[in-house]
Amino acid sequence: MWSRSAAWSNDATRTATRTLDRLNARPRLPRPWLRFAAVTDVRDLRADEARSIADLLSRAGFGPTVAGLIAFPRESPAGDVLVAERNGRSVGGVCCASFGATGWIGALGVLPDARRRGVGEALTRSACARLRERGAETVLLFATDMGRPLYERLGFESEDTVTAWRGTAGTARSDVTLRVLREEDRAAVRAIDRSATGEDRAAVLDALVPLSGLIAERRGAPVGWAVTSPWGAGVAICAADQTAGLALTAAAASGHGSNTIVVPDANRAAADALGRWGFAPTAAGARMRLGPEVRWRPAMQFGLFNLFWG
Image 1 (cartoon, rainbow, N blue to C red):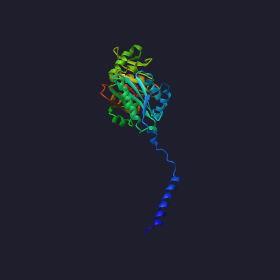
Image 2 (cartoon, one colour; image 1 turned 60 degrees about the vertical axis):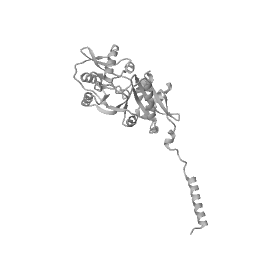
Image 3 (cartoon, one colour; image 1 turned 180 degrees about the horizontal axis):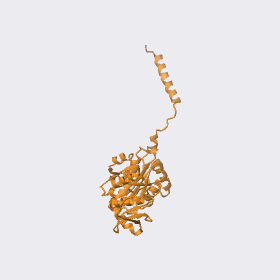
Image 4 (spheres, rainbow, N blue to C red; image 1 turned 30 degrees about the horizontal axis):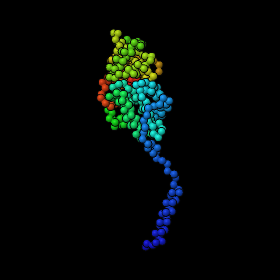
């Protein structure tokens, strides 16, 4: 039977319960994503931030060797380094290398606690825009499994896969002569590189001072080269054919200790030789492009500079 006193008692109980709940409740901590609610701002790296961007990208997963990799885009007129900020805090970075009609995106990293907030997409879009401003018709990059879905969503297409190998080279039969590179070989180095990549990478090749490595010649004509650089863990090797490429690889990656070589999987001759010599795969990525196809020849690339611009 309903009574006014019973109703009052129930109301009082509910009010008291709510009051106790408020008194006993712990203060609510902000949800993690609310710290990143602001729009991501992307800007150019400042001159005094060389050490901080290297540290950021290292913490984003690239490790301490990333400082050497980003030296080219940071110092070259053909390079750009962009930084993503949220609420005044740097949370990501990306590098660009411009080669005229083509441009590369590399070393894109976001701090772990800032991921899945659109930072990677903002950096990718900004990098593409910067390369387009510099004249790029095609934007290229190497994607990890984690980054690939983002790039596909933005319209990038997969072209090939690459593998990083580590080991020591054996011997290879050849009909070429190997000698030390000289300054007067630069034109030949550029010509062979353009034939292999379909790109004008003079900005990178001309920055190799001194020019250090080997050149392969057949009947006095240059047919390949192997160079060392400060921008990668291993040697870069480019050759007109399998014989020259394997001869250069055997010479440049032999001796004591292990060497790192990054090879397009489409270059079966190189991959098979590395396997025979006991090299072990250590990392992999997918070459992706946004824009018209570039006429590159992976069978001529026996060692990439790195997983930034190939």
